Image (tube, rainbow, N blue to C red):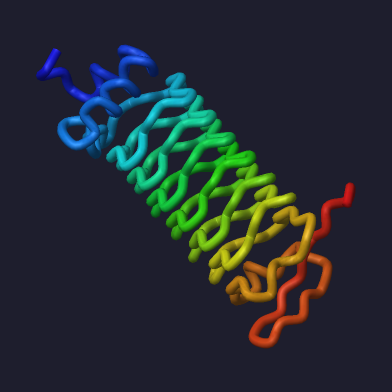
Length: 203
């Protein structure tokens, strides 16, 4: 049991995994190595995955609802179609990840690094995105209704057909260039930049 790999422990289920992380937080349960692991369609609901190394992991269509992923390393991970609703993703690193069609409904992504991430068709409705960075992210068709966009960095992000319920906070760095302007309707006046916002028809 002592020499079990993190993946072997993970497959034992949430109760044993979370207990191990809690009981040995300063020893082997700290920053488990799951680089490149195949967790396709895995049920990881409510798992304690904080600060876990999941770089290049296959989490395609995985169920991560309510999981604790704060500070986790998800760089270049495959999150296509994954469900991360209500998950804790504070300060998570997701640079270069593919999260097309993923659900982040009501998730906490405060301070997360989503630079250069493929987020086409993602549901961020109700999510906390304060101070998160989306520099050069592809956010075409994302749902940002009721999301907290306080001080979010959207510079050079592609927001074509993105859905907003409310205008950007004026302090938010807005996307430059035509990519961030196409398909948006309502004019927003700011001192440094101008963009338009496609209002939610139900608003």
